[in-house]
Image 1 (cartoon, one colour):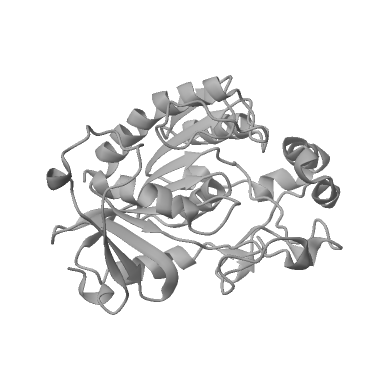
Image 2 (cartoon, rainbow, N blue to C red):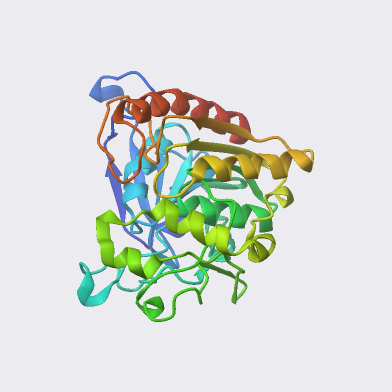
Length: 329
C-alpha cells in the first residue's frame, strides 16, 4: 500500500456511483477502491484501485460550491478508470450569520486569494507515495475549479492534461464577507503569495441581496464590459500550457458565459500553435459533469434538462478517452 499514507486513515470502498462508463460486474468481481488521507492536506483524499501499481494522478478541483462533494462523487469513478484520483478541497464557504456553517472551518471561507501554488506542495507529497505516478498528473475541474486548473497549468509544465468543465479565460474578482463593503478590491486567486490581476464584477453585492434571483452571467459579462483595460492583465495565459486540454461548455450557461470563454481559450492556444479539444453545446448550460443521461433540473445553471443530459452523455466517453490517451492509465 501507500507507505506515506498509512499514518492517515484508510478505508476500503465498494464501487459506487452510476456514472462510470463500464458494464456492471458481479459484486465478487467488482474492483476494490482504497481511500486514504494525504499528509499535510487534512481534507484531501486519494482514491485508487487496490494493489501496488503506480497510477497516474488526477486531481479533482471543485467549483464555487467548495467542500469535498465533487471529490466524493468523482473520486471513486475516476479510480475505477485506473487513476490515483485526488480530491482537493481548497475552499469552504463561510458567510457567518448569513449562511450555513462551513463544512471545513480550517479552509478559506472566502473565495479570495486562493493559493494556486498549493498544487506544487500537493505534488511533492504525492511523489512520496509509491502508488501515485507524479510523472503523469492531470487536473479534473469544473467552473471556478476550471479557473484554478487553467491558472495552474499556465504555471506548471509538469501538468500533462486538463479537463475543464464550464471554464473561464480570466481570473475573476474574489468574494466573501471581507468584500461586502469593498467590492472590486480582491482577487479570487494568488500565486507565490501575490494576488493575481483580476476582472471585477458589476453588481456582485447587489446580487448577494437578490439571492437566487441574481443574474450571475450578467454580473460577469457586465463587469468585463466595464473594464476592457483590465482584460489583458486578467487573462489566463493558456498558451503557456503545452499539455493536453479538453474544454466542456454550454452556450446557455447562466452562471457565467463559459461558451464564450471556452472559445477564447481555444483561440489563444490556436494562435500559439496549440490544439484544444473543445466540446461546445449550443443548448446546454452549466450542469455538464459526469455521464448521466437522465434529465435533471438546474434552473440557475441554464440549458434545458434534456439538452444538459444529452451533452453529458455525449461528453463523458470523450472525456474518458481523452484522459486515457493523455495519461495512459
